[in-house]
Image 1 (cartoon, rainbow, N blue to C red):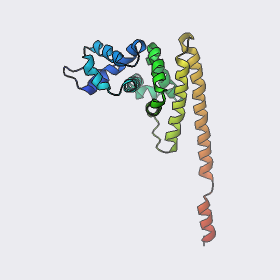
Image 2: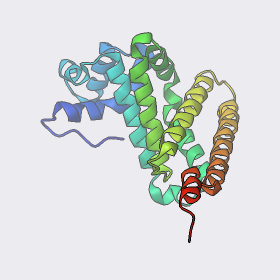
Image 3: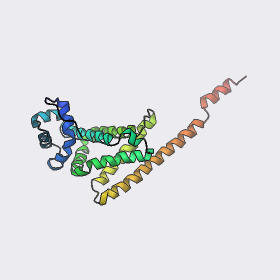
Image 4: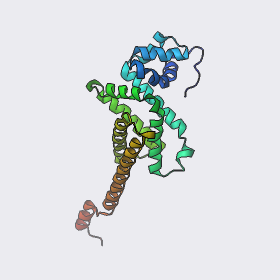
Length: 221
């Protein structure tokens, strides 16, 4: 969902307005100039002008589309809705909501994943995946800034990517195969977090070697 374009929009405003529409056209046209032109036509924007907002080509278009999915996910799951859930339910709801947004555009997603898998695009694809994982964790209420910040996002990125691979080929009713796969992967995340928490607890209670040596050198009086 985007706000109406002003009468004299900037390129940034055109980019934001067109981004959510790209999936419906990329499914048929591919991630190329034609998809941008057709999406621009939906808004009454000149196609050549719209292309100026996507100078980076296919990856630029995909980046903008996924960014729009992130924004729609956040709109559908505001804090007051997520805060009433436990952390596992929050993560599940965030991923399921993303899948619901993309359900009508699975062919566009399939084509996007093929583009992102190309060797020249691996780094950019990883950055986009990390960004979405970071946004999901932040919406879920995680503001960790230590090592947990990175491990949580790495594990969620991996879970989300593997779930997408199932999702694009899922012919089951209401995507039951995808939902079952996702539930199992979320369980893996939760178990991993529990293991980390237990490991941290044990580490917190381990005696400090430097403190012990210091006491040997300077025993209390």
